[in-house]
Length: 194
Ligand SMILES: [Cu+2]
Image 1 (spheres, rainbow, N blue to C red):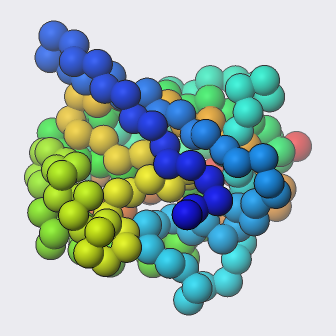
Image 2 (image 1 turned 180 degrees about the vertical axis):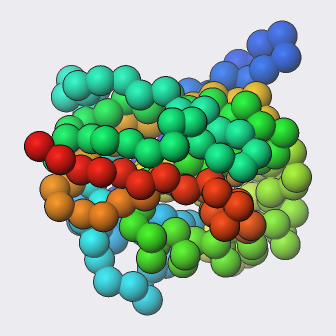
């Protein structure tokens, strides 16, 4: 069993929109969060980098709203203090499924083929996510649920929250790794400062 519990995703159907609340329930044991790369599979093939860790509500210093469009983020880049815990509220205002993922460029690159596999398994459709297909993909090949703490995957109109504690001195980007989207412009730099 995984050392950290699966995220609980609670969806409340609104008039036209879904509101997705994402909570990370963490184990108390010390965790090498660096072993979490951008994606769903195993990540033995690239070296561990400190990308930060899921944030605690009590340590949040500010809220940042991120809006995802086809194919760009608003705001286009972020300036964050080293060690700061940010409460992200992410909205998909595009017509396509999009991801918000905090990682290094290398991790994003490694995540794209995993997202491609999710398309091939019928998990990511153009404007929908088939979570039943995700479950069977998870059973079959060990990943598919896209339940990493550093990322959310949203259908058009969905909203999610993510608390993230940033590291020091790491080159990070926020990006969408649905194939084609990173190259189309769905990437922004995260400038870590004092
Ligand atoms: Cu995207």
